[in-house]
Image 1 (spheres, rainbow, N blue to C red):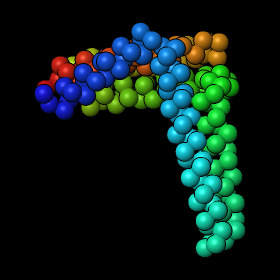
Image 2: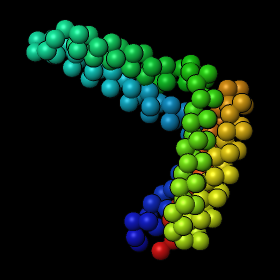
Image 3: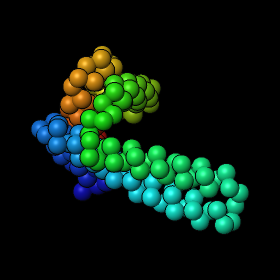
Image 4: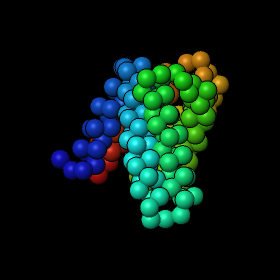
Length: 162
């Protein structure tokens, strides 16, 4: 099995998980991002402390401040998933614009009929995502479902393509 087919199969499986278990998927993504921010914050604080001996004081203070902010956001994502629900709408717009750009670039590349069709579907999903951005604050589950649909579309396109 080629890399494209393996990546396509993985994409379809992840897409199905996101669609079938959107709350679990959104929660898992939030925890993973939170843990990543925690580790980034801890390493940034230690780096800032070590920098005090070698570099100017301002760089160490900036590194420590970034580390503390990352730790706070990490805890918010891990333990209180809804803490940043006001940002979900912004995420929705960002994901929608990225999907629209991805769809347009796929249309402009004109690689094959399959990629053109999948690019049109991704473009449509991007437009739907932006249209649903207003509902994202009250129902953040939509983003998990739409990401699942896009993963399945791209996965099938990778499996079918040569």
